[in-house]
Length: 360
Image (tube, rainbow, N blue to C red; front, side):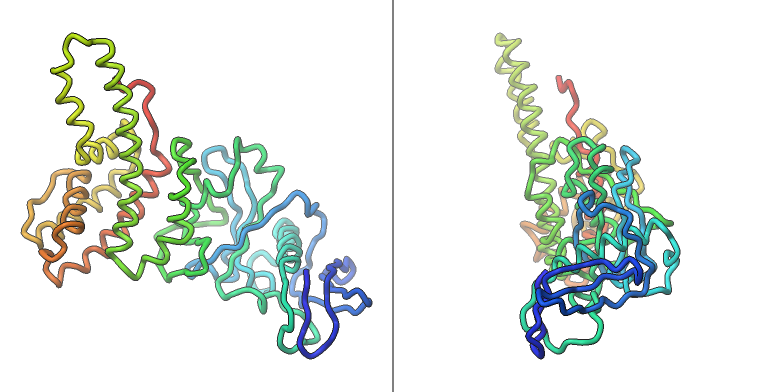
């Protein structure tokens, strides 16, 4: 904490909690105090050392009443709470009297105040308002370390993809997208597959790159397909290991195995494998929607429609990457429609992707 206003010489460096007034106070080395504007009966029961926080952004779930408990869906552990910073300066939402939210609100206020580091802030006031220091739409995710420690190899970045599905972005470059979600009082997020946790690029895509490419449909399609290429690259690696084991066991028929090698080298084959139950579990409703919109743009471009989602997506990939000019101008907006569904499909692939124990 370091705060100095340009119209006074006081530097606030310390945070104390007034348990009588149920509010935080900033204190300078000389003892000057600045009270934080408060609308909630904060509860200081929780040990701050047992918590951490992340700042997220959204334009979809930033109403002051968008306050949710966050659970790991696979293991059923409550990781913490997520809510707009705006909820801390309002007493007009459903959680004003929620004793558990008020404890998390206390933790959030402390962390947000502690993170302030500003010199010559323009014009001091009688009260400090936390929302003056954070952008509109800012969201705070408060994580309980002791709860999260019960999740094996917990890492918040494993949840970036599914948080993005709900409309939460780690990037300040947020876009106004409508997420088709139904939430009551909690959000169940899933980790990305353990088989791809080491792929830093995937987290980078969902932290920032997808948000930045949203206004550019071709760039976004390319970014999403980059993830497909990463996954089918893994499929090639694992199937090549199986192929190598096979020829090692049958050296008398090496010439006959050339077709097997040509098959796994082909991108079209590996995309089809990716969508099979061998490697992923994506809801058929979502893949059918992607199939339909892909076939629409293929049809409009005078190309053959495909019978399954893997073949239709691959055909669109070839069309967009190599023959974009052949797509009628009025049909190019379909790339935007494809991206909306393609994004959902990619998220499901990243969460459900797995390698079978025995490929051969």
